[in-house]
Image 1 (cartoon, one colour):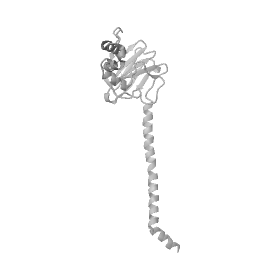
Image 2: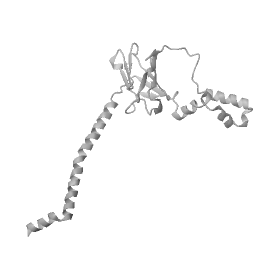
Image 3: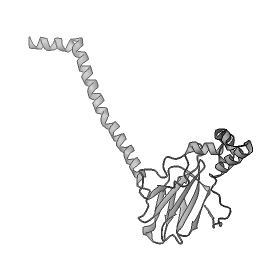
Image 4: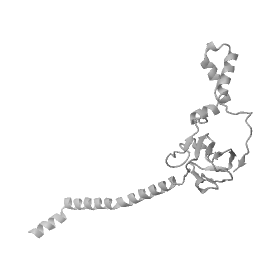
Length: 219
């Protein structure tokens, strides 16, 4: 009797479906470790990129950007005779006489090294780096990885991407015609309002013709 019941259970369609479902669940469970290993590998590759940026204590880095360029200012002691290496992949390395002052920045995008330049002013190194991918827009940070405490935004020169688009699309950095219309009749004649609008727009121009030229080294 027991053998007959076992034979019926094995030949029953419901029993076969239950066995198939069990096999499927085991198969799915067997596939999970492979996905986890892939995620772990990706996480390891991401973490390895973070460690490439190194700013030594006492060194301050300030930066701002435009659509085509990234401007970096490095202020530190012991920069005399420092060697500079810049790659198209966006690796900026400064090798000082004192190894403790060596600095590495893994930039957040590719660089056109043939159009980039840098120069030294006092205890400061200044870099004008040309972005390789103009259409990518503004970077969300200077270097890959987490925010570094010694890398700061130069807010005196920073403008948002939307504001830069407005400046580039109008004379004098802003649309003076819209400025004139916004000023209303209390500003006097159209000539007076136009002059005031151009004066206000010209304030975004930071160029100083009296500022002495600095020695420039092409990268």
